[in-house]
Image (cartoon, rainbow, N blue to C red; front, side, top):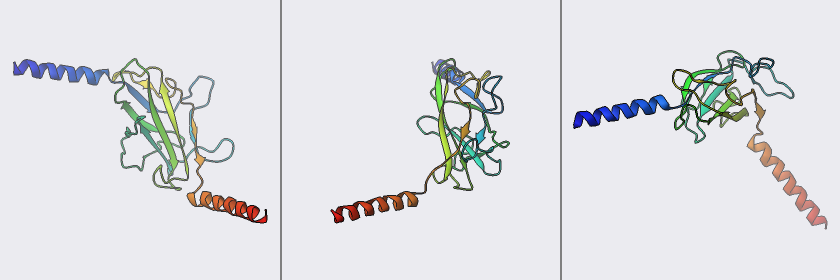
Length: 179
């Protein structure tokens, strides 16, 4: 009886593991044959330069916030080449091969902050896969999803926002006092 229960548990575990959806997280190819590679670009008005390998960091998370990347301490994985990341084949917990799934891709310039939360140049995007692959044939991160590239944005420092709010409040009181 114990052998049968153990065999059933192992079989169920193997089937569940095999059935989870997987993606290949590498962006080094174009989404369509006629488009540009889906790069990660640095912040600047218009089309920014490719995010440098020395400063660029990326992180992949579930929609619930679980880190899927190999580096889980918040400092992110470095870029493989300028504008390109390669986080390997990744299993999306709770997903099933052949079904849709989504993940969050976060990127930042670590010279403006060592983590995504502290960086002043950063961006995140939800990447959706109409169908995720299985362990032997993972979905392609670019051509098998809605990912077409990412350009960092400048996040204002809290002190700048606070200073602007104080200025507006001051103007409000000056105008009110005159009336």
